[in-house]
Image (cartoon, rainbow, N blue to C red; front, side, top):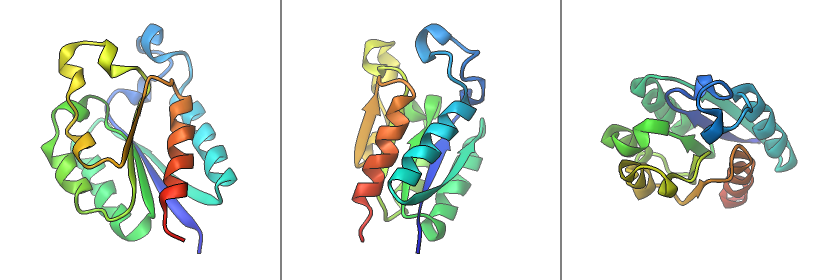
Length: 146
């Protein structure tokens, strides 16, 4: 059976490459998806790649992942700092979870230094640009029990 990793992206990531390229770079979300697909293939996994500007969609995908995925990579974006609901949903998921941020959030505004998601994440990657996604996929694949 192929292992599946859900890659979940929060608000405004649909504007990647257009929104604040000085912080987030010029790569698009489609570039991120291709990078993740390549990393997953190298690790012998499949991906389900999702993005929404709506908190409830992310929660629904986390619930879906309980039965359909072996691991989760999540960039909750601004929900990182506000969503107890996403934390609660992640706490229902038994597999590995890695939190990812394109920018180095600890070099930014103070409110970005707190993450509810980190309370559940098995690892956090921040500041590696979109390459952090490939690192996260690779690491989640290694953390999935055989």
